Image (cartoon, rainbow, N blue to C red; front, side, top):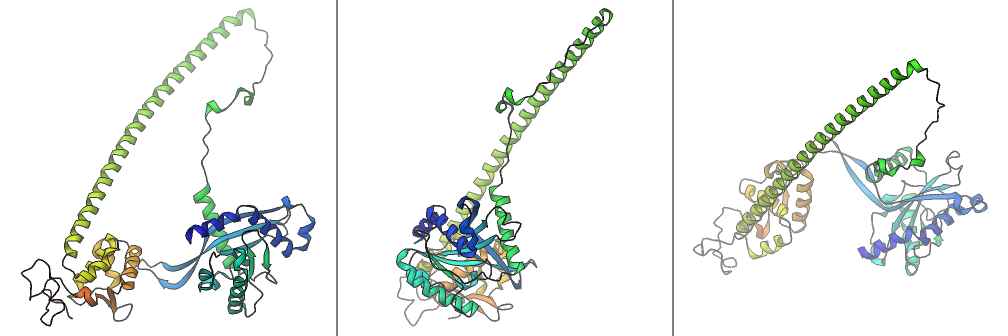
Amino acid sequence: MAKAHEELKKLLGERPGKGFALDVTKQVYGWAGRIPEDAIRYRIFEELTVRYETGEKTRLGLDRQEHYRFDAVFFIQPGYRALNQKQCFTVGIELKSTKADLMGDHKMVKYLGWTDLFFIGVPADLTGDAIEKADEVSQEFFGNKSMVGVFDIENGFIYKMPIRKQDVSVENRLKIQEQVIYNVLFDDIKTITVKLEDISLEDISIENHPIEEIAIGEKDTQDSAIKEQSLSESTTTATSDATSDSSSREKSTLDEEFVKARKEKRAENRARREELAKDLAERNRLLTNKTREQLAGLTDRDQLVFWCIRDATAHGGINGIDIPSAIGQSSAAVSRSMKKLKERALVALDGAPKFGKFKVIGDALKSSRCITCRHYDECQGSALHCGSYQSVEQFSQ
């Protein structure tokens, strides 16, 4: 599905995308059909993210934000004078390649209110379903079925055109523009270095001055001054070359030291990861087969979070805020790991979200060693299902 989705996005930069941009501009402004097509200019920004505040705070005291990501946003300038007449507009695009993906998207309504127009782009065989979905989303957000458009991504043909542009707040419009500015500044900006060998002699302007007459008595003085100037320039050039060579050697030394330090740091990190993986594998041997299977598809960081919570469960659990500092990981990384662990029913929150503590649950509480067969390195299976099972670790059942 991801590959099919990427293929659809490529069409936006080809003939179907251009046809759509021209068609939607002419339908928004009737007069656009009377101007040359090359006067209608547009730019497409893929995966444009919009962020909004949730009213919550992070552990650092910053505003917690959620985000949504448009598949693409068209910025259209309908004519050279449109910028002065404030007739430029934006079109948000959500692409769908299958009916299941189209009808199962429950967050599409979140994309409304950010761009002047919003369209669902689908292949030709999904246009009927897309119109049904567009009506549903439009009804939910606007109270009518006429504000979300549908077009055929394979040829750019518009099947459903919104009756008018959306009323976008100044705040939302600025947030969209802010994302574009940051994308251009930090992703696309390049530094151009001009080399002397790239400059031809034709680019150099030489002024021709007439030769003035020199008196006989002044000729020797003139020649002496020229020689002194030439000697001075030669000395300056030599000094400059020496300084340049010294700087080059110093820079080369610094580069070598940087590369060496980077290699050492990478080797250190690799050794730390290998040691962590070895330690986790040893600790996982104490778990039941079912729990080990649940952990098998998780990363070492996810398993590290699991063991942090499991170790704390015997003492009443651990608060979510304390986990990052306990294992030396970032809050964002721990949040992602916690989501995976909760999805697999390995951990659960005991108590209120703010003050409750996380504990391991279910089979994750059990150990592969029990009092019945503790003389084995690992339980052979019978004790875990018999009535005499009692974990060596003091976890509650």
